[in-house]
Image 1 (cartoon, rainbow, N blue to C red):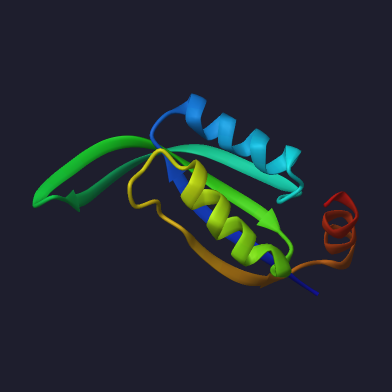
Image 2 (cartoon, rainbow, N blue to C red):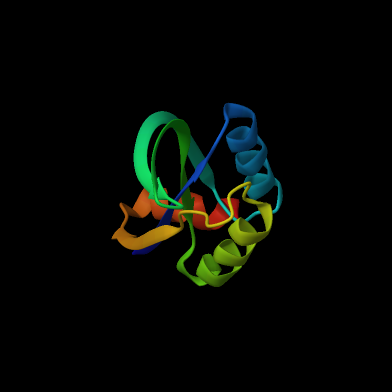
Length: 101
């Protein structure tokens, strides 16, 4: 049994929580985890160092395209990080996820 795990980031705790709540309310995710991270990346020929909030979204495989579209529409970033992978899930978790969304 496989589930989709998608990771994105937001610039503030408030934006991350807003995104997480929207995902849950719109039944696009069964669970969303948020953790504070520190990122170093290149943007417009400058090296940026910033605090961000990583958002991990647990969802159904068939929601992948909807989630990508949702993140493009709701992210505060011009180019949001959107990375994802299929994972094998334990049966009880898989069942809970599919009953939840």
